[in-house]
Every structure is written in structure tokens, then in C-alpha cells.
Image (cartoon, rainbow, N blue to C red; front, side):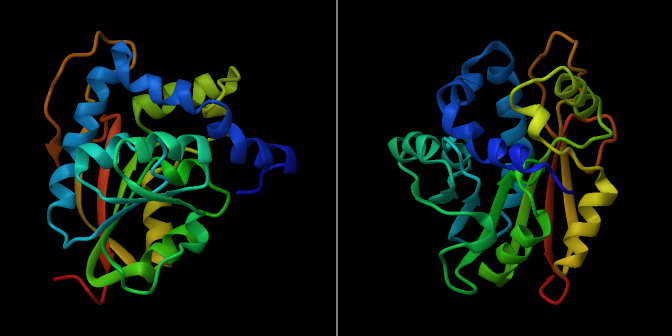
Length: 227
């Protein structure tokens, strides 16, 4: 995936300029219903893994707080100000070059982070570097082929400030990135089974890969470290 230089620069600064608006989404009518369902998809995956846990692309810290993740990294200083206020021990850094030693964490979590980076494989590879052999990578994704992915891509075409800079992956694309980094998917959970035009209602996440789900939680582990 190659972006024009101006698009790369804008992607790098979008969350600096709109950190407050991004954080406010979680308190919006949609966010208050969708966010708990996304957390519900991820929490059981994370609880399989040993601490400490790290979120890459921690942003304003909403997921880290709800999931009990203590450490976070993000390149956006304005976003990290929110995360630090929420008690997350966070540093300004890029996922391609994490400021941690090898095998430092039992889990690395990325929630929609891969959608907004230039080199997803480089970030996954450095996540593998900082993972213990018995640890795992957890991804939270809106897949391109899902109703929500189609909806967001439509908004992107209309110039939405976030989604026009995002790349939504298909499931096979994610599998290929993980495989190139030496990982394989061992468990998935799905959430958001209503379409983007429905009146959203609270409902629990489900085990497994549900094709029409708007949000997918994926747990991947090193092929040599799978227990």
C-alpha cells in the first residue's frame, strides 16, 4: 500500500488535530453502545495471555482502561495526554520501533491501529519482537468486507476526515500480514451484528468469526509458541 506523500503526512497528524473529537465519539449515542460490544469481543482474548500488556496505538486510552492494559504507545502527543490522565503509562513512539526490549510483554493489543499505518507488517513484526514466547498479539478490526467496513469505505469516498486516510483490510489480507510475521490466528470473537443503519441495541459479542459482524477480535500467536 503506497500513499501520496501529502496523504502520509496528513495521516500522521490527523489524531493530533482531532484528538478531542476522536475521544468524544465514545460518549456519542453510537459510541456508548458500540464501544462496550467491542470491548466484550477483546477482553476474553486478552485474559488468556500473561501480563504485562501493551497497547500499540493506545490513542486516548479508552480501550486500555476498559481492558486493564497498563502500558501504551502512540505517536500523537495530544491523544496521549488523555491516556495519561486515565492512568495509562504511555510514551510517544511509533509501532515500527517500539522502545522496549525483546520479550518484554505477554500481550500486544492493536485496536484499528493497522488501518492507519503505512507499513502494517513492520508494526506486527516489532510487536512479535517484544512478545514473550507464550504471549500473543490481539487485533481489533473493522474488516473491509463487513457491513461496517463497507459503510466506512463509503464515508471515506465522501471525504470523512478519518476514514479517507484509513485502509480497511479483508480477513485474508490480515492473515497474510500475520503469517509473514510468523503468527497464526488461533481464536476470533465477533461483535456489532447490526448494520450501521440499524437502531443499535446492546448485545454480547460471540465466539468465532461471524461474517456479518462489524467488529472482529483476533488472537494470533507465534507458530512455535502456540500452546
